[in-house]
Image (cartoon, rainbow, N blue to C red):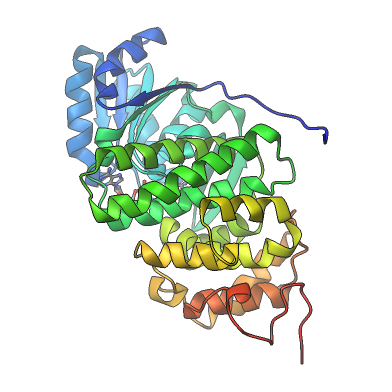
Length: 368
Ligand code: NAD
């Protein structure tokens, strides 16, 4: 067996239906009693309910969380926490709200609890992305790991099925890249495979019946596992491409992941045999990239970057940015290959291995 290093998680996880009722006990278990509740302007109803559950343990609500964690918003939230004399933070929402909670926790040292409402997985990671003057930077900081995560499937029932689909594909992308991570370990591989199995079953079921609570629970379970993987092992080409597209072209996070994933699976397939076999177990088909493409299309995910607002003229610039910094990927990354991958993703074409396109050889060679 290959040698490995595994880093364990410190975050307490509570999972189930109706678990938010025990949130006060979780705040008290941390020795705290004045929570600042964080949410986006669109999730004030859920934050209000959490405020009622917490009762006298609530210090206030800050409802201005925004995408990409702008530092200006973080500054306002820090002021709100100090003004309310808060002694802990409770984030109710998706990656945007939890990102704000992490940014405030970093600056104040306050303990952080979350009730996740999407499948983005940020609650399980030490990753903090922040935006200042249009530039997004991402860091791994153990200080931003959450103290407690309360998964309550009931809070995800309001997630519209098409949002659940792309958010679920965002989670599947964490799992896929964990399967071939440079610092991967056996536990991450097992966890990522289980995440793919859960999401592969649950997402189509949610599309068929949005009120299917068992499917919603299975999707949230898969999202927890995928987020755990994202938090413990490093990501590769897929996350780099999505980071560039989100940061430089302001494309929506989960939708971008949904479009790009099959193309990166195609690109990495020749260099990640075990990962491809595991993807094939979760999503059977003649080739893993084609199976991911068909699965995403089958649950109504967008297929083309141009439909998300990406200009065709941006493809070359994006390819330059993807290769500029140099980072690990199971298969070496070349600018022309990235440009080809992006062009396909921009146009909504099937991934290279699934297409009968002889001009592109998945081993990396370009043909005249
Ligand atoms: P989000 O948090 O921005 O939520 C998307 C929209 O859906 C928001 O308007 C939100 O209010 C709404 N919403 C969320 N849950 C809902 C529900 N249950 N019912 C109805 N509406 C709901 O989106 P996201 O995809 O969860 O997160 C994206 C952000 O998180 C990005 O900025 C991304 O970079 C970040 N992220 C960070 C990490 C990390 O580890 N640091 C991981 C994944 C994502």
